[in-house]
Image (cartoon, rainbow over all chains, first blue to last red; front, side):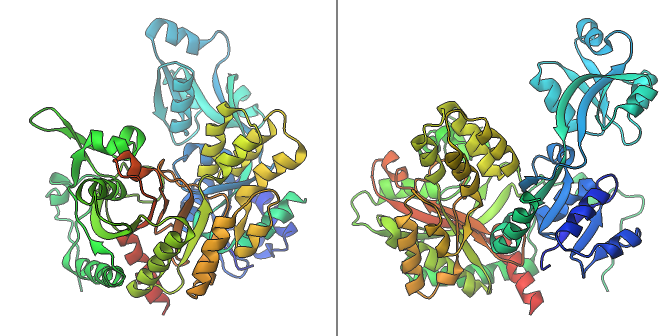
Length: 207
Length: 334
């Protein structure tokens, strides 16, 4: 394949490699080596999901696979979103401690709600679109901890099954958006390598 | 060997005397190369009868508004002593339209101008988008139809060749095509803007979802709305859409092919440019060595009329610094 594809490590890796297998790309080396990052022969570069739009935007990769959550958070990236790949299905939710509604209570009494998240822009957009003032607290690690310690009233986070939330005594209050893996393209490659990219899009559509 | 000292204990001078994000200083080595590139491009344009013009960086906001609704491109405003609102221009097309209507009110068209000037925009979408950038380009005023577009694109390709690029291509689309199609298929007007926004971002997933929710469309119409933006390639794609006439683009191709530039054209039926004043053909310029567009343009037949001299016109503007990056990348490839 003459195209370079940015493939996300982590939860989406297996789905992405299965897809590439179906497209006839040899992913054996990627599967067997989780330290190496650049697989020139297969045309694959691996990275954390949130870096995929960066490499694709700059044209260091022609195509990329990443979650819709990443694309929503980095909505100013100039990349083309070609296909919903269907796998890696998760939901971006607002969650809070069980028992009562701490978010509504904070808004009623204090006029604003404190929200912890790894997705500050999605959280900001969601609360402002729903007419509520929110103070967004960005955290890097386990977001579930923040409401338990009283740091915040609620969180915005991605959940697949809700198990981690439940185990930490949190429950889903609102669903913001369902997020699946997406195929994205560099705008210039989309023109200059149109035939190769279209062949892949057709193959994926026909699955 | 150069050393970069952090100045232990001292705050770096750039921390205490910063420049705004999206702006930059150009030092002599780079400046020499930028000058050389602009010089070679300018020569091609001057030789073709495109005289260089310079206009004020600051214009009355009211005047820019006439060219573009709300003067949406211009993001930096200030007041003068009389309280009039002044704005930093966001491109050279509107100022040149003003120049033509005021300074060339009786001149016989066509009129040809080139420019190498700074313009200012908000930093928004895209990698490392500058707030201030050097734009080089050309405007052909008073020449309608594919002939005018072919002249502008032919010179754009030649100017980039002179700048040292070898593999550059131009994307050509019809900015009114999708809008026209939506109207023709009777799609609810309230949905036009969201659909066009999806198209402009090329969020094809959202576009397909929106199209699937439009009432009163048959399978074939839905398919057309979803697949049209995916159509790009050589002249053959102009034949691939039933019921859509693209005679103007075909004629443009023939004219460029006569100049030996047919293989430089990529037709792209999903191409829409963000600026509001384009009325027909729209262009983007690419080089495979870099992942971003080098510039763009199109036909803007209504713009001059808003300044009181109704003439068809088209042009292209290139980001000279990006052309320089592409030239450096091409040079590195050997």
